Each structure stands twice: as C-alpha cells, then as structure tokens.
Length: 268
Image (cartoon, rainbow, N blue to C red; front, top):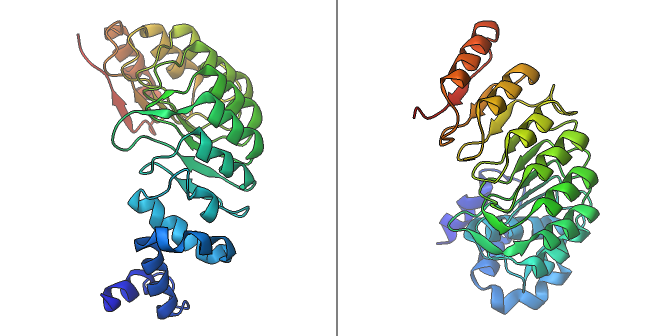
C-alpha cells in the first residue's frame, strides 16, 4: 500500500517527500478524522487534497471551505455533491479560471442561478464554466456570466432546460472572446442563435453544440455558417425542423473552409 501511495504522486512531483504524499492520501481516506486540521495546511497541500477529493467526488458543502483558498485556479466539482451553499466558499477564489459543475452521473437540482451568480460576481477571471444538466440554472445565470466574466472562452449549459434566447443574446452582446458554447437540449430558437452568431463573438466562435434544440430551423445553421468564419465544430443533430437546406449550407461552407472538423445532423 505504501509503495502504491508513493508511486501515485512521485510520477509528477519528484521533489515532494514520499512520506508527505502518503500522508495526503491517508487524510483523503479519513477526512472526518482530519477535517479540523485542514484549515492550517499551506496552499500547496490543499491543492493536492482538492485534486484527490475532486476525482473521488468527496467535496461537500461541509468540507469545501477547508480546502479551497484564494489561489485556486481550477475547480472540478463534476463528481461531487455541492449545493449553492457550498458555492459560497468558492467566492474567495479570486483567480479562478475554470469551474466544472457538469453533472457527471445525473441531472443536478441543487445548483441554481443564485449560486452561479454568487460565484461569477466574485470570480471575474473565469474563462471556462461548465454547467451541463444543472436543471435550475436559468437565463439569469448566463446573463451574469456574460457581464461579470469578460474573459469567458468556454461555456457549457447543455441540458439546462430553462435556458432561452435571452442567454444567447447576452453572450452575443458581451462575450467577445467566446470560442466554445454548448446549449444543446435547451429552449433556444433561431432568434437566439442569430443573436449569438452575429454578436461580438462571431469571429472567435469555433465550436457550437446545439443538438436537441427542437425549435431550431435551417436559419440557425445558416446564421452560423454565414457569420462565424472560424467555426470548425457544429453539432445540430436531433433538431427535427432542420432540413436538407442546412446540409447544403454546410456543403457550401466546406468548399471554402478547409478547417471544418466535425458536423452532425439528423435526417428526417
């Protein structure tokens, strides 16, 4: 067991004492016993704990405040059960660049727009925000993200079924560095996609996932192909109102654009 524990860290951190690595693993395995002691740990040890706890889905509202600190830059909560209450402690992470709240196993109902707004108003350096299948995240959260996170590069709100055109309009107005956006299985219409595709991020958008958006038509696809010259991934399968006209738009784009990498659609 000791040898396995040592090998766990030494591959990437040869300068860290083996005994320390084993101690960190022991702490993760017996969190309830060490919880009060976590407050006094230096940031580099908290980072190790945070990484292991994230991978094992061990971060909760009850312990997140013990391991996050002002220097945290990436936070993966996709495997953990954290609510709006726990997100309040993320506000101290002023240099946070990425937060992953994608639901890894099933839809989340314990994260709401209120929790997301609380985070983004304090963590304004965020560039990557993943919220897939957070069912209680609405347009209010995305509007706040677009306004409070000027460096936003990637946003995943796929499966957030409360999302409407208001979210895409806000991104089109404010998120000039946006490269990748997933709004699959939401309530958006052509109007929202057109606002996004013709907005301030039209030149930077490279990847759009809008599959399963049942209200979209060919106009949405044509807006992307006409106004987003950098697009190389466009997914719109599962959109029953999109016809062969969209396929023609893709073919026209492919003839003039060699960097188109992936396109998916459904033939009805």
